Length: 428
Image 1 (tube, one colour):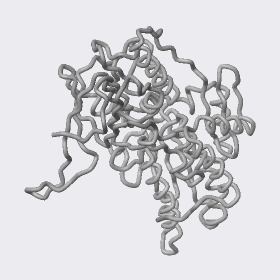
Image 2 (cartoon, rainbow, N blue to C red; image 1 turned 45 degrees about the vertical axis):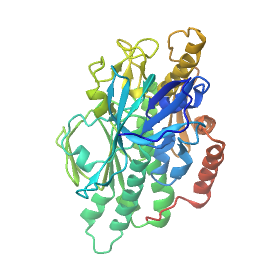
Image 3 (cartoon, rainbow, N blue to C red; image 1 turned 90 degrees about the vertical axis):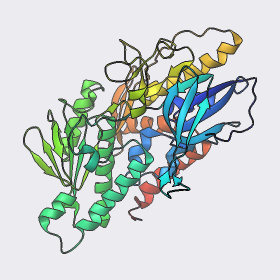
Image 4 (cartoon, one colour; image 1 turned 30 degrees about the vertical axis):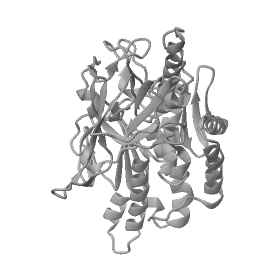
């Protein structure tokens, strides 16, 4: 099998990047095209600005404002929308399977074409997948929140719940079930999604669904002792008090036992009947990473050395959530992956010049989280604050980090539109 390539300069090394997340996309943007023919394989043809993903679930922002097309990131780029299914390290080949199906000429059944691609340098940046911890019913009945498609499904489901609850023939018990939104996990994504839901409730539901407002319940379920355990303790405690004051049902120190189509069962015996359940409890290794014959840590992440080279390999690197430094793991965050992508680009750019680049060092710039009501948390080495001014910092920080000028313009416009006219509640 084969794939069509753009015009190739055979005097350059062939760099293959697997993935278009924070690490892979930063590497793609910074790599020197004078030394490398760049090839990208990923089922996702865009980069997603994940810190603002929760804002799209209720219409505060629109989906297009937080994505960047991969093809427009660099010229002379060969992009293939496909899944990587395996790596042959001996023959330096990557095996792939097309993202799209096509009818088999003989049977007519949908099949996906397969191909292989040679590499000189390979970078594995495939990220991770949601961790269900083996809890029964999670994959079948819960929504994850990692991709644009997840946010779109959640947005549709929220609006569906409100429209169904507006049916005059529905029972009070069923109405309360439809309007309970359960969020499992106590990290930044869960807390920010709860904040966006609360804002939606106070501004838009209050105006457009006034008869339903008193029946809405937001529940946060966290197995640990507190929310935002990675943040400063005072900021974590402040968030707990604020959410309790807002009548958000925060349940800490309790795990999920199983999930059904309409109910979630907790380890303390409680049963929560829900209309929507969002699962955001951390990440686990992808199916590809699990089957690769590389050295890994107990969690299944690929072990890399101080230069992000896969242990035991010469021309294969791993960055982002799929990689780990043995003995000193870094958090699963966007800034870690982006800094690794930036470092690796610098290293690969210097290698042809014979210049050595020191080992990777993570520079912790701190963490931000939106907690609703035009308030945010700022937890950096220099400042630990909460409130409205922190929300201004949160806004400014993310606007400056957006990649394209288009999105730097569009995001403030979306915020202004939501503030002035409210969120779009049309379901289509």
